[in-house]
Image (cartoon, rainbow, N blue to C red; front, side):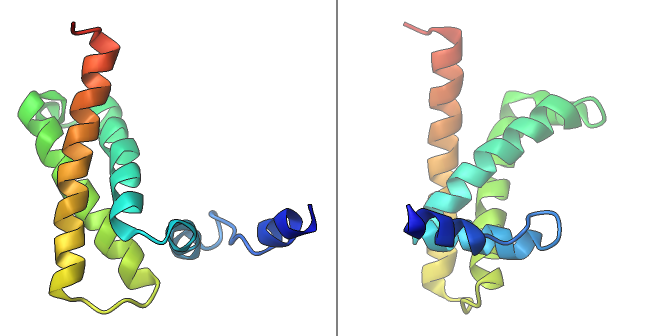
Length: 117
C-alpha cells in the first residue's frame, strides 16, 4: 500500500504540468508507441466528435484515418521528446507504428460499436 501511495505522490499535476504528466504516463508503460496509440485514440475521437462541427472533413472516413495517423505520430514524438529522448530513426519508426496501431484500434472499435458480424 505504501508503494502505491508513494507512486501517487510522484504523479505530476496534469493542469499545472501537462508535459510532465504525459511523460510520467509514458515512462510507466515504457513504450512510446503504445502511449502514442492510446492517446491518439482519445484525441481522434474528440476531434471527430467535436471538431467535425467546425471542420466537416474530420467526420469523414478518410478524415478519421488521417487524424488517427497524425495524432498517433505526433503524440508519440511529443511524449518522447518531453521525456528527453533524442530524435532518431527508431523514434520516427515508433511513431509510424503508433499510427498503424491507432488505425487498427480505430477500425476495431468502430466495428465493435456497429456490431459488424
